[in-house]
Length: 109
Image (cartoon, rainbow, N blue to C red; front, side, top):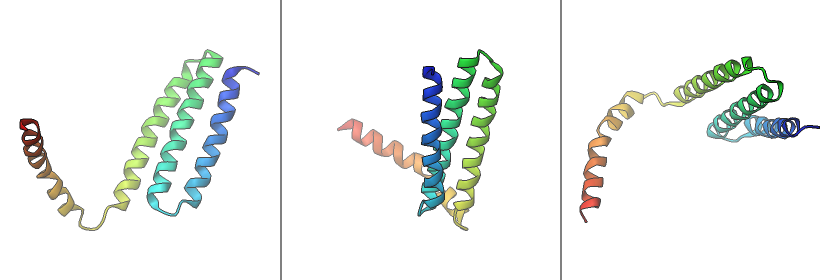
């Protein structure tokens, strides 16, 4: 058994543990983190398959999986935003000015 195959099996088992966490997770944040971890492990598995079989076509599949995972996480996060998301967005727009003031004051000490 090659090292790549052993690592793929270990990553597959770890992805199953993350899947259990996604199903059981008591909060939505646990489920989102678990789905992100599953996507990351899937990327690693696909890239190891590309390396072990010398087939560069798998890399395209890994890139598509990464993009789909990223967009999926954004969609899940958007669905968790409260109804007053516009108020939160307006509040965040004023934060950079506060952060700049805070960092300038700390550096000046």
